[in-house]
Length: 244
Ligand code: G3P
Ligand code: MG
Image 1 (cartoon, rainbow, N blue to C red):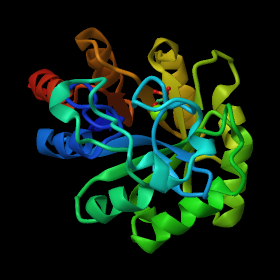
Image 2: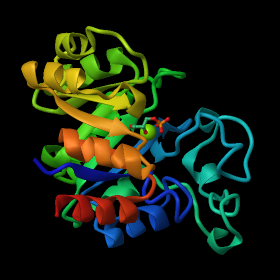
Image 3: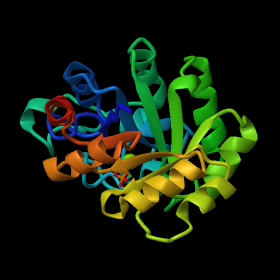
């Protein structure tokens, strides 16, 4: 089984995370998928940004939820990474999907509801994915199990994945109890036993964040369904190498 490569926040080693340049570079590198994080603005617009707070990846301060998208659109979301990206801005989920729906790629939307429970985010994201006809190639993940249950209640055919860095023996059973289709776990949790248990529960297994060659090799050898990596170009190169 081929392990699919998802660019984590886009090709986030080469361009500012969760921005259009990072997504475009992921596609150019040949990644099969893109992982991105969604939060909600004050006016309920889903935007692609990892942190609840603007400080780390923009020239703004305060929380995403306290600004309208029109306000956030003015921020510089690229200079923190390199002056080359000073005209890069926070993108809405819809603007991203306008580009994405024409790309032959898979999508992982991570609902960032583990710190702030954005009201109605599941429905809002679902409607966007539906509008762009990408639901069949999307998986919705979250550290917050309530979010995943809400997503399934909107439409049971939506693919969901429980996301965790916590090691517990019954992880696959727990994901199954939430009616999830997949488990997305931190790389140090990966071993043969987990693979077997996921298989038994008919769950897909994807691993984050896989940037080191040794971990890539482990993932490819065990045959996990997917990895999330900041360096999709390297992950593809190593996958080709180890296949031979
Ligand atoms: O979805 C996998 C991974 O992105 C989860 O952690 O903090 O990078 O969003 P984080
Ligand atoms: Mg994420």
